Image (cartoon, rainbow, N blue to C red; front, side, top):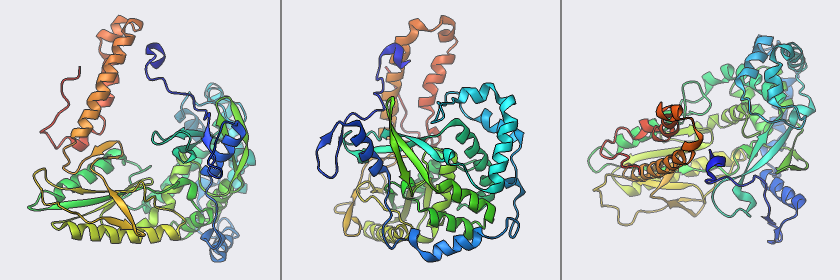
Length: 465
């Protein structure tokens, strides 16, 4: 549709210029740009941190040297059936491009029946020896602009790992086998990558909790939206394996397999049709794959020990809140919890981004007793108080009126209607008259997170032009 209307066509994914953090100068050399982006994506290990901790290494070493059947034998990790391979192939999208092996997903889709037997044998062998081939640990990283800040700042890009189709098939099989073993031990506050949980469920619980909290007389609520700096890239492999052993009681063969999956990973930067050299990735987990998301959920699962207030998680999106009538007491409680969370992050090699972590004070629309509200602080730095915050796709406001969100949706509806008018002459008349195309195109915008702000019936999206 964008091609037909020439409307807001996205720019190329290639980065044409970047600022060198060392010299402060802007470079346009592709090799230099790739090196700078790779350095910003890689989180370097610091001396004395847990990734070099002998005690942690010994826990992993002692566990993985046990025979497969010493503790909790898991037969599902002993073999991979042809049915599992077929289901994994059918689940993946057709449009998946080729990886470093130049074999597109369409090949696996078209040759599914013929290729399932050899893939089943290959994957079973990998599961048996618990050793993943090096070619499965190669990723092509797309530097995705976050949408904020200067495009020349390397910190404003998010690494998205593009894997070969055969690796996606294999990772999905691991994901499907691992999820039932770890999901029962996930904390109830986690809504990411779980059965019957979603952004919608997290947003509904949060908004309802705030509604209830400010419903009473002189009642107010305060919330801190926490941003973890390079959360996926900061995951310590040894700490992750330790948590899988101690917190989830996974058997040696699974730990061996995941350790092999994390060990000696490399990636290259995609610059349009060109690729950089390969860079080693000694920390972090791939961002953008179901298995990577699940491993991060395992890693952050014990954050509950650091938070003594109500909180919710969606992957690495964390918010915690409290209620009260005195804004000073609310701020004190939030500051103390944020300090405890920061201590937990330090122990787990994560960093709270104090520049993007924000604080919001919720209250009734007629509540005016807010003169000077003290600041929430972290390590002596003030956490910005915000009056508009986008949480999981919905614009939150102190009065929970959702006016800003409705205005945003109205603007998007106007844009969508303009696009429909522009392509009308290219679409069969029957499709337009049946309303199937307009309905599908517009309803996804109107219905976005509708259950969250539905309780507030005083406002509505109106008069789309």
